[in-house]
Length: 283
Length: 99
Image (cartoon, rainbow over all chains, first blue to last red; front, side):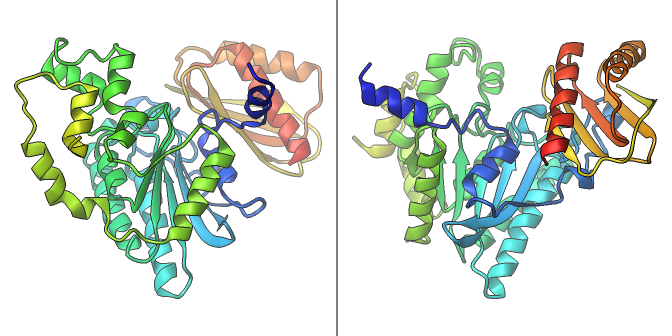
């Protein structure tokens, strides 16, 4: 290995190896991190203990205010290691509330922007409709806030982003992924259960990543940036996108174009990575 | 799931608070906050039923060696082994001194 490759690897600081709180701290300007409703507030799920499941003091969601590139920002990080990053009533309300406060800031003249660190299987099944309602509120809040300032979603991995929160990801002004990321409406095991092992083998990791992995999603034009698992690279990407301001048109507003592409797909043959890329890119 | 309470003698209240760990598989979350002078109070919420004697022995062995400041410690345990519990507690106590 060349000398400079070794130096570069040693200088690199992995982002995916960080927990949710460290991720939020790493993206905010040094010394500006201030957490809202921190774990000592003990705003926990009232539903998990009733079902014999140990809760977490922050319900798996970290809301941190601070500065990004000198501008006011809120970073919302989901902890993928707690209950698969699933969203229940409390964690969901923390995210929706933080986004709504950022929109309120903007109406009052403070240009708050938001970063969502999405590491989630979607709704927390133990909290059912309360989780679904919270996710709907999050989606509405993203759409409201993105009118003022960019809302940037980042799927870093290893959990990925699935279920209702993949729709939230699709509503972001910009979406970033790493190679470790996966993004999809249904998780691999759900698809396997519904469509059968022949169609979709959830244990075949190269196959799963070839269809839903970060690189494939970027090559298909479904996300805006493909970043390496490095704190400085991710910070740089965020600064660049915030510097650009809002996109001319959000991806979710281009739904007609996407639907047209999907209608042209021949579903009688098993899709592979190349077929999916060409379906979206028309190559 | 079980909720357990423990009390041990302690010194003066700690000066800061700390959080370490996560309620992930085989791991635990520990919140340490200043407590009542003279008392170390520990509340454990654990996914493993029938583990009270194991926690008692683990704490006794750990606190025999050192007098701790007065703390309220909350533990949310998701099946951590005694070795992991001890590492997390020691990490938390170290964070108290550097927080």
